[in-house]
Image 1: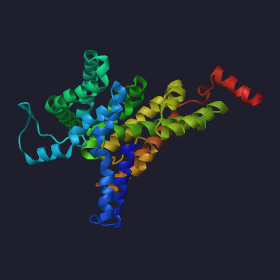
Image 2 (image 1 turned 90 degrees about the horizontal axis):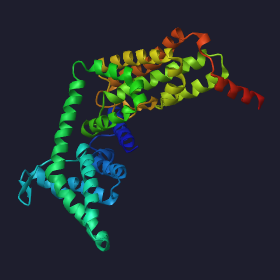
Image 3 (image 1 turned 120 degrees about the vertical axis):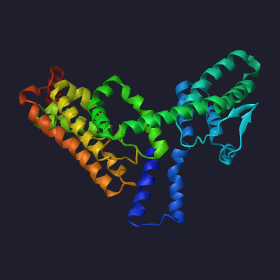
Image 4 (image 1 turned 180 degrees about the horizontal axis):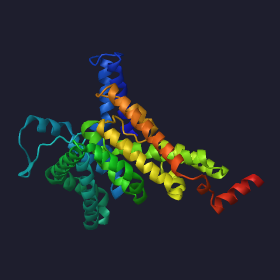
Length: 353
């Protein structure tokens, strides 16, 4: 939600300069600009909160430890170019604003440090020693070792993303879009989240993972709506219509498990359509300025690339829905779209009621 809100503010600013609603030199524009930048600049803090819950560490200490990365004195020291050290050990001068991996690695390491400290401190002094020792050990370790390692990992990840989005990037978008239903089945779509979050944190844009997800989600929606349109079973129509709308809004599990996997050919149609629209998106270098993977991404194509990117994005979305709808309508036979015995019983109960 924070990324979406910040991204939408950036869209508003982009539209305001495009249509000359306000000057980018005005105070109102500048205030909105740093409001929009807030979620990205303080990304390490946001991640510290969620990582603290995940790794079951003290949230307030986690925020303070990661907050050291963003402390104004440290940032000014790095910007000055003067050497930084702690107990004779050098600290690499890195600006950690809008970073992702250093914060995650730091809280992961802190989870072990906090448990270790808890084991060695006397019961009567835990309230004093536990937070103090955890902070005193984790913060320097983060600055000296973990932060720089995370920075190198982030640079490596950015290099991989740029490589995938290079001259043959359209192939990656197409393959990812076509394979997305199977990635969702395994739960591996969650593993893609840090990659697009890192992309937004670093550049404020994304043109691979979320673009592929939009193609896949809308294609699932189009295929499921075609089943709803073609089926003669009232219960199937009802389920498919609801699942189709849900998929278009970014939640594909009802469509995937309830309709397209069940009838198979709609799944094939959705994969083919997602792959074609993904290829088109890659060739046109469709770029998102707001993290979205549903119909609401309509508002996320407006940015530095201008109206050409908006037109290409809308074309990609329309192509995903229409192609999958038409392919499903052609491939799926009427007699194959039948309700299961459970669905028929449910429909009978509804009629009797």
